[in-house]
Structures are given as structure tokens and as C-alpha cells.
Amino acid sequence: MTSTHTLPDGATMVYDDQGAGRPVVLIHGMSMTRRFFERNVGPLSERFRVIAVDLRSHGDSPISDGGNTVGQFARDVKHLIDTLGLEQPVLAGWSMGTMVIWDYIRQFGTASIAGHVIISQGPRDFAGDDWPLGALPLAMLVEILAGAQGDYAAVMGEIVPLMFKDELAPDDLAWMVAESCKIGANAGCCVIFDQTMQDYRDVVGSHELPTLATWGRDEKLISVAAGAWVAEHQGIELTMFEESGHCPMWEEPERFNQVVGDWIAAR
Image 1 (cartoon, rainbow, N blue to C red):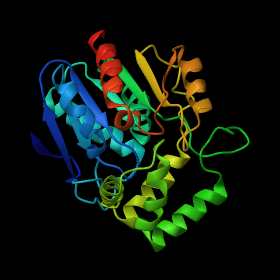
Image 2 (tube, rainbow, N blue to C red):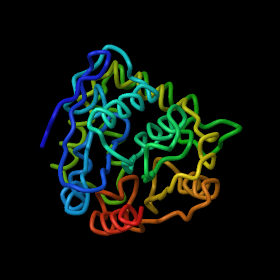
Image 3 (cartoon, helix red, strand yellow):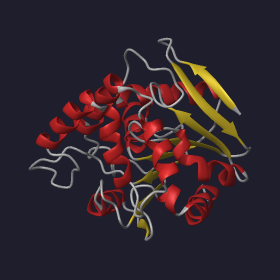
């Protein structure tokens, strides 16, 4: 089920492809990997064809010397979709993965996709006077980048626990931090900076693509208020997961798979 895809510039994407029917592409967050969808791929693939990707430089995809930007990730996903001949896929983006989808919409429009599942991501992570709902003010961004250059694993060791409502089991914390470090400090810092500075407020609400917004109630990274803003401007309801933080697909997998699966089935 695990395959590799060569991109036009020679970079490689690793992905899993399982099931049949409506294509569903799962796109992970910054520095994370497709493994964070482990509790979703199997159940969803009983209803759909599920493709879970490791974006370039992430996870099992080799580190790329260039192209570590949200815009390039969107082009990479488009190239994979076109190469596989996926017709009207639903794109599900967790955290930065949804920024990749918004960038896809900005670059290519919505005609080739059937829907967008948002998992805990606002339109902008940089916090400023014009966007107080952002996660990172400038001083914090600089601190994270400096720390990541010094000890990337230590920074990820602080960030990963914040993604969950409840304390992780030691084994889960260990593999999640290890997965998040596969990108390495240099590519990782490029991605942290690039995705933090993106702004998709002009994309949200600019299209009529069917969209489902999901959010954990105990969100410690991307505020629920940012989710409410997205839902209001897209003209949809915000679907809350009461026992989750940043990762409802991991903390409430049964409900997540049912809610998302039923929504996709209706497309």
C-alpha cells in the first residue's frame, strides 16, 4: 500500500493508498507525518479510497533541498492527484495541511476537487494587530526558530504534548516526537517560518466548495475563535470535538471517522 511519487523537480513523496471509491487525500500538519492519521485510514478506507501523504521532506519522504513551502506542497499534491488520475477527490487537511489546500484553491481553483475537510487550522498563524487570533507573535516565532536550530527534538518535545487534550502515553509521545523530527532542523525551520507567514483570509469564503470544519474544544495551539471565524466566513457550522485538542482525528477517532465519513459520502 505504500508507494513513492517522483515530483517534477526530482523530489519524492511517499504515500499510502488504500480502499476504493471516492478518493480522499489526507494531508498532515507542519513537521508531522501521515502516521498521525493511523486511526483514520483503515476505517475510512472501508468506505473510500484513502491516500495519506508524507509531504516532501516530511516523514518517510526524503528531505528536499528546496521547495519547502506551503505553495510548493500544494503543487506537489496537485501533481500527485493528476498522476494518479484521482477524479473529484475530497482533500482533508490537518493543521498546515489545510493551508496546503487553501493554497491549492488559490493556485488551481476548486473545479477539480469535491470538498475540503478542515482540521484545526485558521487562515493565518502569525499574530498581529490585524489578526489577533494567530498562534505566534513575532517574538515567539523568533524564539521557536532559534530553539529549533539549536535542538529541534527539544522544541518538538514541547510542541507535541500541546496538540492533545489529555496527556499522551510515553510510547505515543516518543514516536510522535521522533516522527516530527524526521524533517530535520533546516527544512523544518523553513516550513515553520513559511507556513506561519501565510495568510488565507482572502481564500476563505471566496468559493462555494463544500467544506467541513472540525475543531477540538481543548485546542491549545490554534484558537477555537479562529475556527469560528473560518466557519462564519465560509458560511458553515463549526463541528466541535469536546474531548480533543489539536488532533480530533487521533483523540476521538470513532466519532471523527463517522462524522467525516458521512460528510464525504454525501458529496
